[in-house]
Length: 382
Image (cartoon, rainbow, N blue to C red; front, side, top):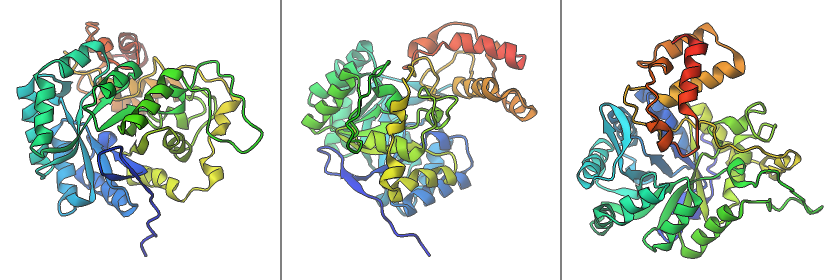
């Protein structure tokens, strides 16, 4: 017997779309077999999920998502990205209209659709990014896509409060994909004083981030959330800056209590991980309560890899996210034969790094990638 659909839905800003509180972030399903991608989507849709993000530019994941969605495209609000492209087999960012158009057409073809619900200007974090998008033919191209119905709403993905606020102020955006979790939001050193009454969700939020959330609410720019779980770090007491393990339910509830947030798009590599996210729908108030974070002063998440690969492309073909994840695992639990085999199976390794620094200039989280690559040589031997 199918479980009762108890998913709740929220208006996504001024888009006119109602989105599920829990959404699917497709990134972690990349490089997994079609059968797994289909099983994750089956689980998500059965649980009431009606929104997914697909920034990935690789042909295989796009084909897998399109095949899995065949016959039920209308059941899913698809968030696709303008500027996520492939070069030499690697994900890359582009501001070139012709290249962006090529990969938007590729997205439509591979996902077997003729429209994208949410067309997101991809990864705009710096003033240089802003100028390359909003003071260039790219914004005209994006607006034409909307006028022609190729995208139903125009959004942007960003990790920077200042640049995100500047983009909202243009009045051109309908929605935004933004990185939100308590470790990103809370002021370091936090003097979190709680009212003795039940927890209200008011914490010592970084004022710049709070201003952005309220600005989006004021302007009708709905927020979909990435990095809800901090790349899984918030689920581990050892890795979390709070020193305690949060659950996916607590992380989701934190994000969903921010102004303008409509949906948290949780990355799932397996159906079980999707089920864990869907547990939010039936969770009690006690299970959603994230006030445990008030017991410890958080350290910054800056400098910690989120395994997003926004640092790419790498001139020597290193999959920086995968290599760094294996390094982090080795640091936490040691180098097992299985872990070493996974690392060795990579087509390029930390020892292949030429220290060009392009990765670090691209990284939105200030990760010392070159130091990590050097550490891989010491830990794994290559």
